Length: 230
Image (tube, rainbow, N blue to C red):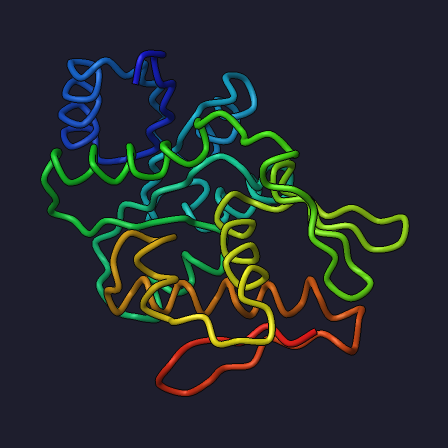
């Protein structure tokens, strides 16, 4: 990527943070560092980073709380959790809070950088022109994929890139089954167990977004995928 990426690193382990910061700066990133969640929130508002890498367990304010605060005003910026916890429920809490990805400690810097670039490829890519992607009418909703917006009556909901990609894939195959594996590979990059659970969180969220029109359903076709019924 040609432009310098501004990354917010929030990590209370100073040795690990130093290694991550130095390595990312050597790879061309601009790294802003915070030692706890409270400082992380202040620096996020001050610098508006392109991506955030956030530890889960921290003093003063934990990573889950920080991500929830960011997501309350920003659905676009990619958020990656660093976690020493491998239990499914802890990872799912991160996804429910609004994280896009997670990486377990100990991790390789190469893996972290690959995950960062995979998320940034979506969020920093030039938006496709509306004429080529168009707007989709879903019952009483108007879905504007290029603008990542879902309209109902006079209300507009701003979608994250991943939410927009998920709804676009379902809408392009409306009333037909969209393969679970195809969705995972296309949107998440692989079909791992944790990514599959993450996608289930997004499906639940999408059902909530579309609930104002009772004629719209997202049906789980067991063992195959999902079907958007309109």
